[in-house]
Image (spheres, rainbow, N blue to C red):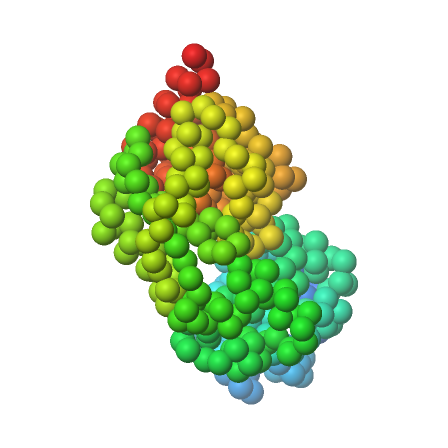
Length: 376
C-alpha cells in the first residue's frame, strides 16, 4: 500500500472530513441550481437540466411548468445524462433545443411566443412578465440577438401572415383579423404602406393590382423593371424574358401583370444609365416591402458612392450593428431592386466578391464597369 493510502487508513477521520466537505459543496451547488429553477432563470438554460422523479420528465431551468417538490428533483449537466437515467424530455420547454447561446435561445423563445400570440396584445411588459426579465433587459437582449425589437418582429410576422392570407384568397377583413390586426383605419393605412398598396388591392393584385413591366437589353443580359402605381417594385436580371417573367410571377403570384415598354421607358433608361456612371435619379420612386432592419441596410447601401465598395462588416458597423454581418448579407440577398439599391457594392472583408442574387459574374461585371467609369 502506498504511503498516501496508508495515511488514510491510519487516520480515517480525514476521510470522513473530506466526505463531509464534498457533501457540503454538492449541497451548495444543488441549492444554487434549485434557486435558478425556482426563479425560472433562462440565463442558466444550457448549463443543466432538472428531472422530476414523479413525472419522469426533465426540463430546462426556465420551463414555465409548475415547480415540483424539491425532494423529487435531480440535476444533470446534460440532457443525455438525464435520458440515460430514464427521464424523457419535456415537450413544453424542449430542453434539447438549447444551442448553448443563452442570448440566442432566449430570443428564439420570445419569437415562438410572439408567433403563437399574434392575435393578442403582446406588449413588452407582458413579455417581461412571461420570461421573468425586466422590460429593459428583455428588449436589449432580444435586439442584440436579432437586430430588431420584439415589436418590430411582431409587425413583420403579422405582415407575413397577412400576405399569405390575402394570397390564399381570404377577404380583407378575415385576413387582417387572422393575422392579428384590428379593424381600425389606422392599422389599415399602416398595412397599406407596408404592402406597397392597400390590402384589398394586394388581394386582387393578388387578383387585380396592376403591375406593369418592361424588358430590355443591358450590359448584364436581359433586365426587367416592374412597377406599381406607387413606384418600381422589382428590378431583375435574367438570361431570357421568359426567365424574368417567371421570377416576377413568383414575387407577385396573383397580380395582373402587363407589359408597358413605353410607359416604363424612362425608368429603364435611368437604370441602364446608372450602370455606366450616371447617378441614379433620386426621384425614381421605389415601392418595396422591407423589415425595419432591411430598410436600414438598404438606405445605407444607397449612400455608397458609385465605384466604391464596402465590406459586410463595414455596413453593419455603419448602421450601428457591428455584430450583424450575417444579417446584412441576408438583407443584400433579398434586395428586390438591383442597381437601384446597389447591394453589388458590398463585398467580403478580404476584398473579394461574394454571393449575389443575380449571379457572381454579374456582380463582378457591375463592379468592373463602375471602376472603369469612375476612373475615366
